[in-house]
Image (cartoon, rainbow, N blue to C red):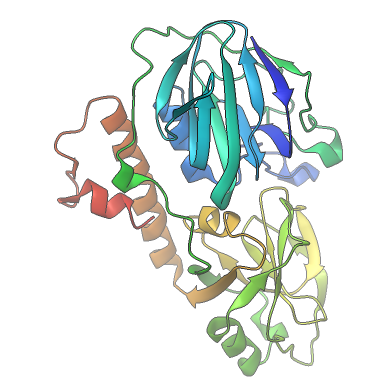
Length: 331
């Protein structure tokens, strides 16, 4: 139902990822920015984990071979049959219509969702692409994608209020980390360096891990090596060169470098959108604080879903009596 005409950069099918297979050495994978991807799905009436397109950093040109409802998430120029349309908004496309998605003006990853989701055969419970293991492949011009079943009436015309659009333009951000579990492999000065310095995302970064450059983090006499232990997205490894590597969605499931901390899951999508050359700082939080941040993020996304479904009144979140816009704008 959709034919890809131009694919100028990395384009893959992603969903929420593969759960329950890390014990077999299979990475989670899935969309790098779950916040934007989930909203894109909400805009077209999909479940949040419906398969969609993830592009980096330029979007594709595609033709609809049947009527469909779509939405683009990202700070990007979008054209339907040459006419500008807005991101963060759902639109009805007719058979023969051509959608052009340009280069992201800020951020690194963008998303295109279609009502009904992209139809695919799940591999280990997910349609997410993990090309290194042959679980799907990057898409190319000429590929044809089928869409799942959707009742299209009333699915177009949804718009996320502009005040809620994620802002990924900052060239330096701060994300929270829970320290550990291998702190005995770092000196006190090394930990202080990690928590006080800004680190730059390098061009060698990818979906597997973000390699950072900056002041060297000092190891203790125990050194950088450890007995291979589990890794999760967000784990911050520090190899012998003292430069941190943050594990991302396609990260391997185990590793032999000491881990100084873990970026909390509520903030990992913000780090994912940081471009090479931009900087990140790390702030220590407790496990309980990390849980509260995740709960706040999930409440915000639930509020956005309810709003787009027309079930949220006056932008208010009942639980905390805070402005919906003010709360969501901080994620």
